[in-house]
Structures are given as structure tokens and as C-alpha cells.
Amino acid sequence: MNKFFLLLCCLGVVYVGFQTGEGIFQRGKKQEVKLFHPEREYPLTEHRLFTFVVYASNQAPWCERSLESIFAQDYEAYRVIFIDDASTDATYETARNFVMKAAQDSRVILMRSETKLGFCASLYQAMEHCSDREIVIPLEAQDWLSQERVLFRLNAAFQNPDVWVAQSSAMAYPQYQLQETDGLFAFYAALLKQVPLKDLFFEGRPIYAKEACFSSLGNLAKGRIRQFAEPFLFANQAGFSASKKQQGIVSFLATSEPLVEFPQSSPSFQTTDMLIFSYDRPLQLYALLESIRHYISGLSQLSVIYRASDERYASAYEELQAHFPSIHWMRQSANPHKDFKPLVLQALKGFSSPYVLFAVDDIVVKDFVDLSHCIDAMEKTGAYGFYLRLGAHVKHCYMIDQPQAIPPHLSFGEGMFAWDFASAQHDWAFAHTLDMTVYRKADVQSAFQRLNYKHPNRLEQSWAQNQPQQAIGLCFEHSKIVNLPLNMVNLSDCRHSHFMTTEELLVKWNEGLKMSIDPLFRIENPSPHIDYTPEFVSR
Image 1 (tube, rainbow, N blue to C red):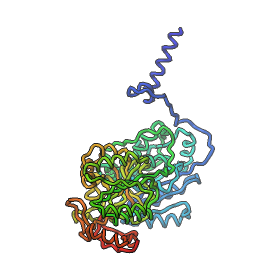
Image 2 (cartoon, rainbow, N blue to C red):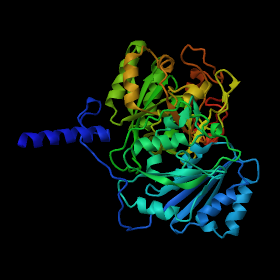
Image 3 (cartoon, rainbow, N blue to C red):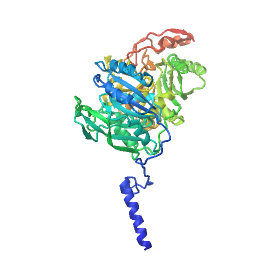
Image 4 (spheres, one colour):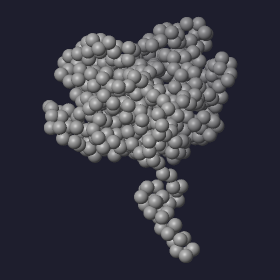
């Protein structure tokens, strides 16, 4: 009898493991059996805050009906973010007038995009206006809610801590046929903030279809999804083809892994280390270091590897060190091609931050930037790097003297945007650069150990040939640095302005002069490098 009872228990464990997909036999891994019960009803203890994100693109004939169904809800704790995505009809004006007429302007935020972003990018952008515990309901402006108690029903469902996402079926209009797809989707804002940006790009371009966002959210909340069989939404198919709704999603596969616990998106406030390379340009290096001290925060350790051709330059560098004593200075030997790589690896090993950025001595920082914000954005999005040299105004490639297109991108955060390197060209296509990009040190260290290089130019060239796969870059809308290629110190085919030789700049240095950084403040440079005539002032 006891043996029979034991056998039944074992069979029960096996059954639970197969049914949940999370048991001890899943993919050969031993895991703790974790069961969620999103279908359970819990007592009503609070009124959750809901936020409708209404996406509209040329939907003037339908947006009033969509908004009216929201305003008719038998529930008070909600607000609306209405996004007009570059409509060419009267969508924005129609929505604004209806909101004012319904006296609902206190609970509606109206947003307007001048350039087409698509559903996913618009929704991602709206998350900047949502707290983690707000429950977001995306709604296309041609669709509308099916009843007045949708929010009441959702509020009851979200009392259950095992519910992170709720999903309903839809009623197709004008066919009035029940369908499982295109239903209402509701989720905590914190979930979408955890979606890796690469999940929102397909073949190098931002995905327009909402299914991209919903697929990733479903992966993150696996097991914590409440399904409603009844339709909470009328899915308007009058003039909207299914193929258009699925645009860009045909072979999409989300990469998000299920979350173990509810995500917390508090800022990290991490700092980064920095390594600068300089060769016979103490005056230009002074301008870089002065601009760093003036404009940059969130910097931890700073090291400089410098090379001096003779004692005149060495003496100038020694004077420079007196101005910046907190920096770790590393001088190259008489055989610089042999010690450059060892010094680079030594510097990286000595850095304590998990993040690092590099710079060369012809850069000047031109605007304020907190590097901890860059790191925080990288951690939230899973981006490969944060590129201070790029911005929406960088539409020309200096090195080949050719125009370059801004790649398709997603806007988010405080004046930031993201792009996929697969769709970029020229300056925007280089994932690896020594021009002040924040990287994870773990992504850099092994490559620098493996590559062959004898000076910074060769390092950058070798590194550029090892592009990361499916990488997303981040930058500010306005770039924070500018390169001033006044001269050339290494044999290279790189373009430069021939303005002043290093000898002529050394004379200026010995006269007690420096290059003024003030005229460069927030300069709108059309390319990362520019021809520039500097102003020299007393140090």
C-alpha cells in the first residue's frame, strides 16, 4: 500500500512538470516548480491606475469613437496619452477638439510626432510618462472598447499579484465576428521598460506592428497572463487590411527571457572609467581635459597614455600633468609600437568600473552630460554602446566628404534615440570607435586582448572590422562632443584640415596659450569631425 502511494506521488510530480512547462524535466534542467494562478479572483482592495496609450495615424474618422469609449468607462482612475503619428489628415485637431468638448483635457496628454515612428516606437516613447506600476492599455485610434465596465473588470483581475498582463479577445468590425487576435492588451509599464531594444527592430528597422511589443511582453510575463474569452475591444477592419497590421512582423522572434520577479527600474547611478590617447599634442589634450572637467559628470578613473617624440613635447606634457594631477599618466617608451598594446591592457585591468569609454586628443566636449544617465539607458535597453559623437544633426561624413542618412530609429527618454547598426551607413554604421562611446568593459577587454595593434589608429581599424551582431546604439538628439582634426600625427589616409602642425601648436603652448573651448559650446556640427579655426587665449 505504501509503495503504491509513493508511486502515485511520483507520477503526480511528473505530470505537474510536463503541464506547467517549468517542472524538473524541462530541457534537462533542474528547476524549482513554480506555479502561477492568474485566473484566481482576489478581493478588491485598491483602484489601480490605468493609462490608455492611443496611437493614431490618419484616423480622423474614427478617433472620436475610440476616445468616447474610453471616457464612457464606469471607472475614474485612468488617464489617456494620445499620440498622433505624423498624420496628414485632421486626426490631431479632431482629437483635440473632442477632448475639449468632452471636458476631459485634465486627464489627456496630446502628443504629436512630426516624423513617422510607428506603433512600437510611439508606445515605447510613452513609457517615459508612466510610472512602473501604472497599467498600460495600448489602443489604436480606429478601435474602441466594447463596454463601459472594461476597466472595472481589468482592475479586478490586477488585484491578483500573479497577473502582470491581461488579454482579451476582440469583436471584428463590421463583420461582428469573435476573434482571438487583435484583442485588448493590458500590462504594467515596468514590463515594457524591460524589453530589449533589439526586440523592437527587424532587419535593421523599427517594427511598426504592435505584435512585436506584445510578443516580448508575453515572454517576460510568462505564466502571469490573465486571459479573457469575452471581447473587450471592437477591432476595426473597415479599410484596415490584416497584412498592414502585421507589417514587419512576419519572421519576428522575441528574445526576452521570463522575469523571476517584478522589475524595478530605479536609476543605477553607476560611473564609467576613461582612457585617452595622445601623441605630441599637449595643447589639444589640454582642451579635451578642460572640457571634460567643465562638462562631464559620472566619470570615475581617468588615465592618459601619451607619446612624446622628444623632450620638448615631454616637457609640455609634464606641465600639463601639473594642471591635472588626479589623472593617471602613462608615458610610452622609446619603442612605442611595442608597449602600446601592453599599456592599453594594463589600463583596462586597473579600471574598477564595468563601463569604459575612450577618447583621442583632438576631441572637445561641447555640452553637459552625465555619464551615469548614459549607463542607465544602456542597462534599461540592453544597447551595445552610448555614442556621444552622434546626434540628429550629424548628416554628413567628414572622412569621405559625403552626406549620410540618419538611420531608422526609436526615440525615447530625455532626448535620446536608438538605432540598429544593420540599417546604418558611414559614421552611423561604426559600432566600434575611440571617439567617446560608453561600452561595457566586458565587451571590450577580450577584443583588445585578441587584436593586433601598435597605435590608436590601428586599434580602431582592427576593432571596426569586428562588428557585433544585432547591436543597438544609443545617442542623444544633440551630440556632446566634436573632433577637430587640425593635423595628423600617424601615417593615415584619414582626412584632416592641415590647419597647424604639432610643432606650431607646441610653440603656442610654450607661449602660455590654450585653445578656447567656449566658442564650441553646443555647436551644431554636421559631422563628428569638422574643419575649425581655433581661438587661442592665455592659460
